[in-house]
Image (tube, rainbow, N blue to C red):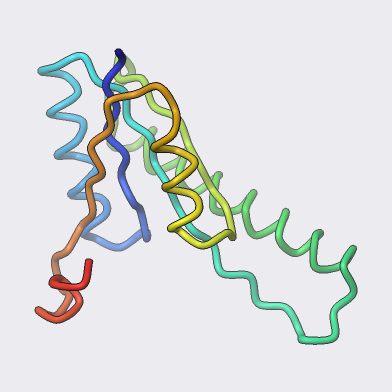
Amino acid sequence: MRKRLILLIDFSESSVNLVKYAADWAQRTDVEILLVHRTTVMAPALTDIESRRHLVQQTNAKARSELMSLSHEVLPADVKVSFSVSELPLRRTLARLLAQPFQDLVLVGMKGTGPVKQLVV
C-alpha cells in the first residue's frame, strides 16, 4: 500500500515550514505528499446558484495556483505532490481522502495557535 502525507495548508508561515518538513521526510522515505486547502467563498446571501458556482470555481482555482506555487518554491522536483482544494468542510474532504487506498498521515502546522485550539485539533 502506498504511503502519503496529507498536509493541511492555510498559507501561513507555519505552512511553509510544514511543507519543508514534509519534503525532508519524503526525500528520506517513499511517500507522496498531498497539499490540502479549504477555501472560504465570500458570496452575498441572495447570490444565484450559477453565480455562486462561478465564485467557488474562481476561489478554488486561485488557491490551487497558490498551492502549486508554494510546492514549486519549497519541494524538490523528485517529490511526488498532488493538490486538493475545496470549499467543502474539512471533515468531509478528509473522510473522502482517508477512504482512498493509502496509508495516510495527516500533518497540521500548529505554530502560533493557542493551547485550546491545539487541544481541539
